[in-house]
Image 1: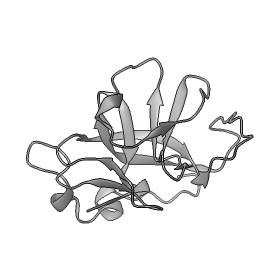
Image 2 (image 1 turned 90 degrees about the vertical axis):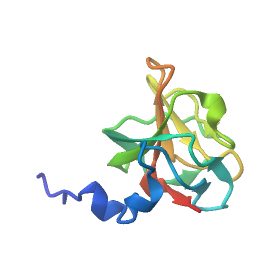
Image 3 (image 1 turned 45 degrees about the horizontal axis):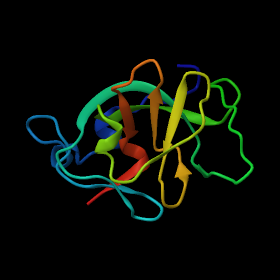
Image 4 (image 1 turned 30 degrees about the horizontal axis):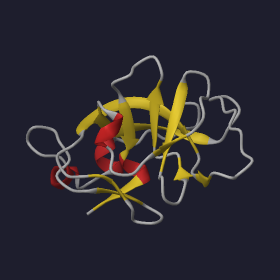
Length: 136
């Protein structure tokens, strides 16, 4: 399809059975890939499959005013996510400025991201991409 190789979520995360409990929740802590800071505690997020575009990972700069749109920035569409329904569930997460109707989630300690996505129209859906975090 348009030169993009389709990869199944099980290829992306072959150990999903060790990450997702029988009730669909995360069995391990979710950590920042870069600094190891804890983003979510075990049992606090549900596994969800939803196609979301996330810009390429990078560190936020002091003067950065992010004005990203899906058509103008490098990134990828990811489908495997941890879904959280309350922003206060996170142990450690930051949010970018509004980019249209979206705020991107970043690590609050090292400010590298985006690790996830939140639409301002849906106050109860915060998505963290499995490919953008570690589990321990």
